[in-house]
Image (cartoon, rainbow, N blue to C red; front, side, top):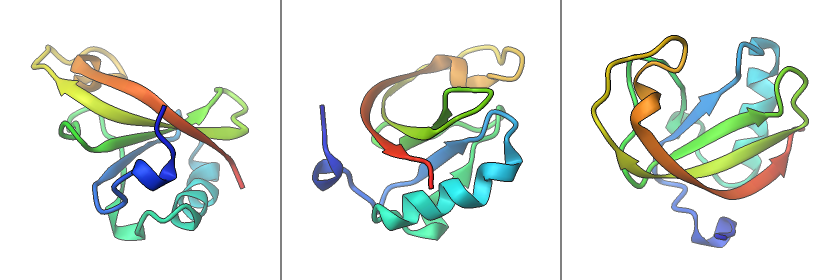
Length: 102
């Protein structure tokens, strides 16, 4: 398990809100307070995935999240997009930290 000191905050971090757009600002502020720069926080889209070494921030646990799960992208495989997950279906990741949501 990594800790924030091992996280490269200069990398992109893709934010998954699971439809909770009302929590987008709160989640962004929590990530900024952990050292990520606002311009590196990208709303995750099913049509575009991150690269190996980038991060994912997932509001957890839907439908009423109370923390953000930060994951490190370890592998990206080409896949046929599937539903709301889209191309992210081909992304392997490992959990590295959780931070409270706001």
